[in-house]
Image: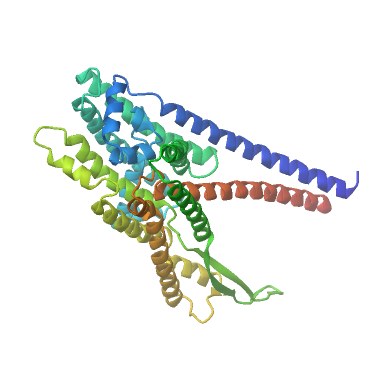
Length: 444
């Protein structure tokens, strides 16, 4: 066998090995999502399905539909996974706030893997506490609303235990997908829950058009806007602001390395879908508490609070927009530190043309990040609130929310990039292994 044939055989073997690993990871993701979807169809013991369906029919277009969308239909069936990943997301928000406020948590962030394990452990315990509060509140509400066959203490204990266990299982499943699969596990679970509701929402719109409740011209216009919205999201998410970086000439021993030029890529929307998820979660929490406890005697005013915070209401729109803008700046500040970037460039002998290394470089990068974040925050706000404006303009209901479209598109793009990264890393590892073996043969 010639050398070229050996090279081709080794490359083919490397591709097959990398493909086998990627295939196993993708199969694990598929299996985990199937388990999640099966779990959303297992109801909490003791729930009366007829009463639950009547409650959803009475609250169409309200906060319950928003809960149901993020849970992948688990609320409509009041399944054991009804709480979903909301407790985990809320705990993550609180931990990020504590990281910004307390030096101890900031120190954990700087400790590398050990610090991340401490933060992860604290987030898990906090998730358990939040799930206990929300699970107990939901169980009490189910009993007070007459949604249980027997609203005694036994039902309250079983329902609370089931809901809390389901939430912790969701957190564990998301971590397993992140570790043993491809992509971010929590994002993929949210993605699967939202996508599962798309066929029903699209079918409902076509059914409304068939019955004459929705004009066919309006339906086509909404479809065109949806396609344009997806195109706009893809274009912006792929957009970058590249800062030119020059590397000074280096000399190591007798070898002289010529000056090189590169670039520092900065995404337009560095926060991704996190602002939309965080803002939705923070609005869902008080609205859900008000809805759950509003059924108690003397707490009728909480029902009014829940209605005011329902999707489509002016206060909801203003608070949602403010939450997206705040979390866009907040999450970007956590994930990207211009001072650290400037210090790393200075240590590597790199500089931005026309900018002095050190503090001035940090200030320049911070100004660029601020301008990008302003545009990114307005972009996410526009995408998330566009369906709300469409409902008012076309005077009809629009089931596919902007937050759902943004999450689905961004998570799908991230998932595909992760798949490509796994393929490239496997090929690179095989190439390095082959190179080392050849060098070893020459030395012998």
